[in-house]
Length: 93
Image 1 (spheres, helix red, strand yellow):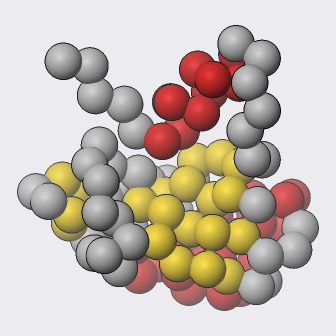
Image 2 (cartoon, helix red, strand yellow; image 1 turned 90 degrees about the vertical axis):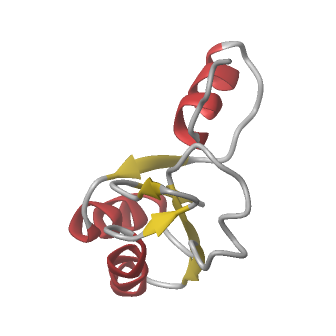
């Protein structure tokens, strides 16, 4: 079975002409903050792991500024969800 993370799934859908929210993957809190600056406004920071229930695991956080995005990514990156190490986050407008 093919397992996709959210960034790959959204890239696939976008490539086929389907609308997806603006966003991107980040491998560090600083990179997540830079994405938030680029996107502007409030963002959602999500762990990029191939499993569901990320919200229940505390790995989907809302941020209202690049600084809050950096802090949220810092809380998520380096953690573990359902046996998967969290190495990246998805920052979405």
